[in-house]
Image 1 (cartoon, one colour):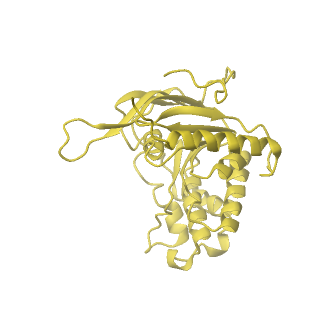
Image 2 (cartoon, one colour; image 1 turned 30 degrees about the horizontal axis):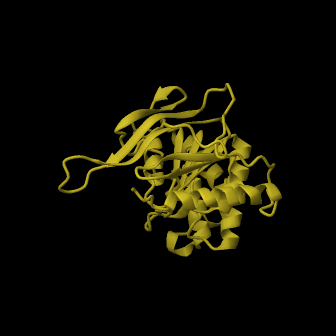
Image 3 (cartoon, one colour; image 1 turned 90 degrees about the vertical axis):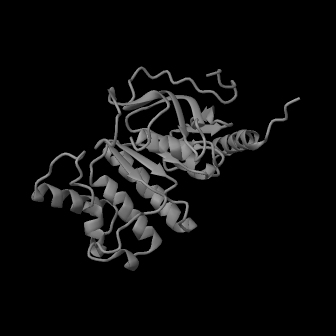
Length: 276
């Protein structure tokens, strides 16, 4: 991959090996009637450090969600590899928790049962009934929903449903959370509450997270590092570090400067290039 522009690039000097690493990823999908797969992301490499929150920004179609599914072991790569704690990822891994944009709650299960759903899947470590119950109750308590644990999904607000989805991932005790625009459908107040909750949980457990979002402000408020993907096929075109302590004030001059830089780069990534 060509070197990033100096105004956008950041060199990570940390010698600590990442909890997750992606090297030379190329991702694509096959369309009906096509003999070859369409490449949506190329030559993508990065490392995620323990306790770090990385936000991934980019225009629609740049390959952000495909990247997240690949990091979760849900989508194969055309080239490259993903490693978790040095071990090559070949499928879903119990060290990973995924939170989708849609909470994906099963309507015939209670909140409590939805949180426990999947703990018995084959790739999950075996838990006896006592351990399983304790995991579920701890996860529900983490998101502040113990009083609602017997409710069904149609009795939950949008914020409560997304908290339940987050609790379902936390019940697996993941080292890494993968979040695909989980707060985009929420109102502004609820979204802010969920952002604060995510920060509290990741800091309390030293959990790493990768957050795909279209919201620059959300990335600036939450992330230790921001990656921008653009182009066709998508590739890494810039990265930034908001070097501000939490909780952050979105009116901070440093964040305001970063917002302008990122917005300009995002606009450039969306602008078609004319070929002479």
